[in-house]
Image 1 (cartoon, protein in one colour):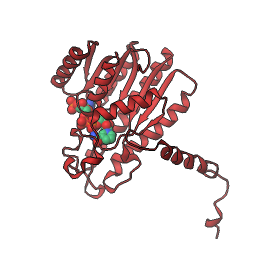
Image 2: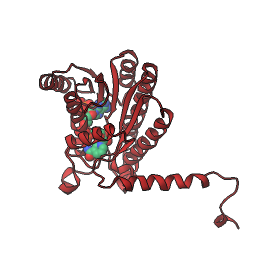
Image 3: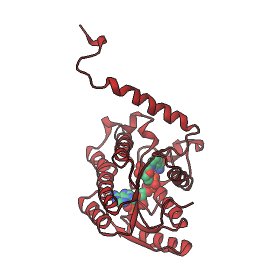
Length: 264
Ligand SMILES: NC(=O)c1ccc[n+]([C@@H]2O[C@H](COP(=O)([O-])OP(=O)(O)OC[C@H]3O[C@@H](n4cnc5c(N)ncnc54)[C@H](OP(=O)(O)O)[C@@H]3O)[C@@H](O)[C@H]2O)c1
C-alpha cells in the first residue's frame, strides 16, 4: 500500500479540506509530513493531531503562497531538505464571479495562488527530485478544468493549466524515477465555497465528495501509475477517449497552409 519509500511529503494547504485529507492519508501510509499553510495556530493544531494519531514526524512552515516571499521560502525548503520526496501541490482558492462583475485584483490573486505558486513549487520539486534521482509531484486540478462554466473563466482556466502543465512535466520525466500526477476532483465538501460566489448549499449532495474519499482515490490512482486521476469518473475509458481525440488533432494542428474550408 505504500506510494514509494516513505520519506517526507510536503503538502501545501494542509490544514483544511483536501490538503488535510492528503496529510491524514500520507501519515497513515508512514510518510513524515511538512505542512504548509498561512495560519500558524491551525498549522500547530493540525501537526499535533497528525503526530498523535499516526506517530510520524510532522513539521510545519507558515507561508502565504500568494506572495513571492511565501513561495520562495517553500522553494528553498524543497531545494535544501533531502528528506522531502513528495510534493502535494494542493493549496488553492476559488473565485466564481462572472468576469464582467469580477474584481481584477482578486482574479490576479487567484492566478498567483493557483497557478504561479503551483508552477514555482513544482519547478523547485522537479529540480530537487531530478538531483535526488526520485520523487513524486502531485498537482491538484479540478473538474472545472473540463466542465467549462461561465463563472469559471479564471478558476477553470488555472485548473486547465494544471492539467496541461502536468502532462508536459510527465513527458519531461518519462522513463525516470520522478513520478508526476494530476488529480482532477469534482466538487468537495470543503470551505472553499465560502465567499467564492457559489455557496456549497447551491450544489446537490450527489455531486459533492468527502475530501478524504478524494485523497484516497488520488493516492490509489498514484499507486496504479495513473498520470491523470479523476476520482469520481466511473469509466476511465471516457478520459482515455478524450485524450485519444486530442492526440488525433495533433497532425493537423500545425501545417504550412490553411485548411480548405478557409480558402477564398
Ligand atoms: N473544494 C472543491 O470543491 C475542490 C474541487 C476541485 C479541486 N479543488 C482544489 O483542491 C485544492 C484544495 O481545496 P480545498 O477545497 O481543500 O480548500 P480549503 O478547504 O479552502 O483549504 C485551503 C487550504 O489551503 C490553505 N491556503 C489557502 N490560501 C493559502 C495561501 N495563500 N497560502 C498558503 N496556504 C493557503 C488554507 O490554510 P490557510 O488559510 O491557513 O492558509 C487551507 O489549509 C485547491 O487547489 C482547489 O482548487 C477543490
